[in-house]
Length: 181
Image 1 (cartoon, rainbow, N blue to C red):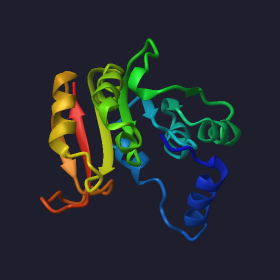
Image 2: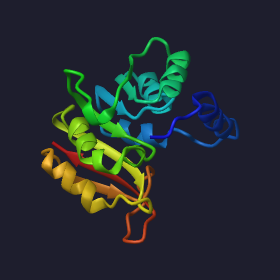
Image 3: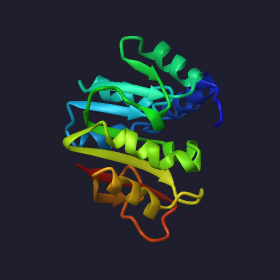
Image 4: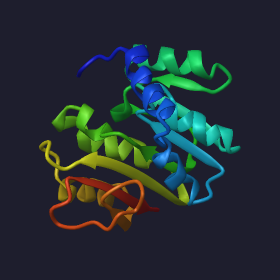
């Protein structure tokens, strides 16, 4: 599992935002589902979680990388940040939405991906959604992800080629999938 430099990772998004580029597409899509609570699974430096909290959402951010969680805690010390492996996550609560933004399943060992999906899905409230976006050219196909979601009791309701809801086509290099409980 790779390790990251949380400050350098965040600096990249800060530079994009300073250029006027919207770096909150993931949060905007999640907000369109009007959740009261969100688990930001694989939160990195907290970019999505912090934006959701700015809109009044009760959010918890979880990431396995110490540097990423440290940067998230520096940026928003008032929010709950948990350092944990998503494949064995058990927070003891559920959420209206669980979001896996930014290729989260791809940062997990291939043999642990079904457990990651199962553990994240276990945190989806009845009537809630799990929203995940990831590259499709990196040895993890949608049929495997959909199968893992199905095994976890979730049903595919929507799929797009981007967080901006561009229509999904067979050759899309990226997918954003919404599975509901």
